[in-house]
Image (cartoon, rainbow over all chains, first blue to last red; front, side, top):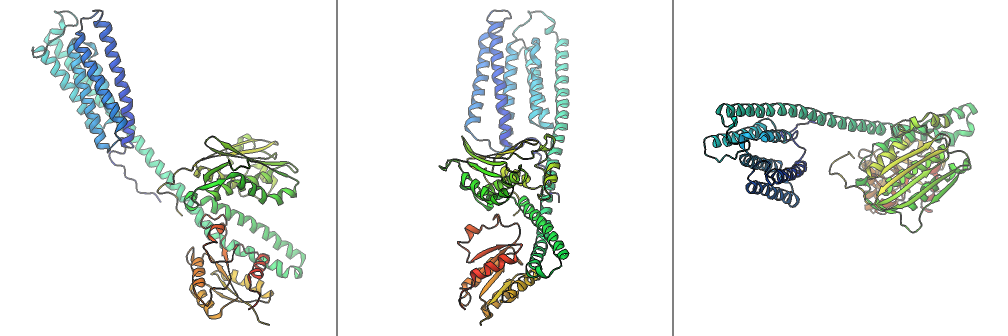
Length: 458
Length: 131
């Protein structure tokens, strides 16, 4: 089932008002750069009279830009991002102010004579990063209007002209001014068009990715639902058949011919396997462990001791030693889901015992970390080949060596560990060398992540 | 000799038969019901010595509701209850034996697949010594 996905017009613009803020912070840094460049230019060019700049007014503009930027920075720090519409309006206002200041600076530094007039293009490109089609052109037209007004204003004597290149040059010729304005209009509008097209293309790709990701997520949920359904449907018949065989062997075993009893025992073994699979699938498809088993302080040392106890019998059968290295003062206590940790340790310890060398130790180490606690389960068993290590967390994957060692095992133990550790906000790392053993390390945080408002079905 | 009676409430008739065969071997009389409502009625009518109750029948927690009903009814409130939980529920994400037992009026949990030997042990343990 594919969930209905509708992207709002704003969705492909930004993820949220706060992510827009993030970009604004970046532009604020850019603006500090502009202030610095302006100050440097005025100081070097004007201060040393390389070019006759009106130092005072130019510094004034730089100061105004710096003050405005300071205002933006303070606002971004203090006020939380509001609706995306409000944020976009604010950005537009900021950019319009930038363009006005840029025009004033150009006026002070030669107007049409100043080759830096194309700094306007930069603003159009930035607008393309932030806005969509029409709004990008709005910025381009605002720049065109301001610059054209400035140039015409100077030419018609309405604004003061600051000479940059000497009094009588071709820059005062009408034909030259028309040519500059023509090229300016062309560059601004084509720049807006090209950057708008590129950004439209990029956003289309991004929208596509968002939709695809949602589809993948839905497919994952559907797969899990399917597993859950199959598990549910299969568990009763398997379990009842298992009980029937056991009852038959129990009540009528002595009367049965040896061959018949052997066959029933084989069937019982296979049903045990199926039962294990059903239990593992139930664990794997059950999500939202933190909701079902709310976090509480759990001493990992106690859970580890219990997990080792449960494996005493199979370990003893092959002469293995079970070793627990854990603090006894309760210092390895974290707030987490007790049943999930028990399951994680249970799976890891039973794996270690199952694939250990006969007589080898299984060591469970519990340790305090600065921001949580660590569990480590180590064996000296068959190990996992490097090329298989990446796959042991995949559902149903069993290594070649594991399959050779025993028919038992569903290939779901480590995937369950992986899923649970992930849900608890922890991390799991596996190190292994063939013939030397495997060590699985689980780091759990002091506190689990907050439970999402929505999520896995129950 | 008073014959002791065990009431099995489970919608899986095959499992009911397995339990019947197993318990009859132990000289116990087995009566059964396939849903909670019928089971509760039968419990009041026949007053068995012990109830074996499946958790999940028509609904995921029908068994729990029946357990509360049995405890709330004067005629049945003292009858021991053994609750049978489905496969794969033992880790207690849906309920936790240790925790819920304090609130749940049941004597014991028995995990499926039901092992005949364990069944007999538990039934013997919880059957009242005199009727």
